[in-house]
Image (cartoon, rainbow, N blue to C red):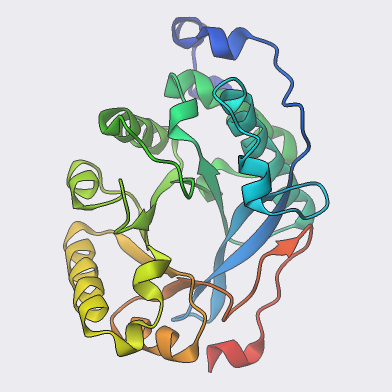
Length: 259
């Protein structure tokens, strides 16, 4: 798989010191998987891999252990273990993996472990979505855009997370159009009763339709939120209304969540 994308000369030219160093993460991680549903087809579209501690500890407890010294090896370990876990669980649909742009030095070099994991565990790369991890504040937007473009070139799908918050705004979208944008959950919360949020989300939907970008609403917790967003033209959704993250297991959608 990797041989079709990387020649020996290309590999050598893209190696950096971080890729050469043998590093140990120093703490254990596992993954919970939360379904992303397509309300139009009433089926699971993808699963997002959410990092957890070895006994189900929160993402915050894990991310608080990430430093400048271990950021690269943490990012690489997350990719490999997310793919491994999804393959072992036999998850259907796509797999969305959060990545740390500040841990990616040269995209062609830093992506190699992902290809190797996909090959080892029999998980097709065309089923992988890369999205910027929640809370990762990107100072170098051109660097992020370059990463996204390279990942698209390699055959991965891409997503901009937390759209409408912090770095993930219209300026980024004007420079790069991913396959998916995920509307920040603060815009989703109580959108059925907030005229300003409704106007903003309707505008995002219209812009993305013109750019051929799919919109995903995350953090849905009520039927009213779901109904407004679906009526607004959003069919990809994620949140506790449908299913909480399942630790070392497949999430099950409650049949009543569709109605």
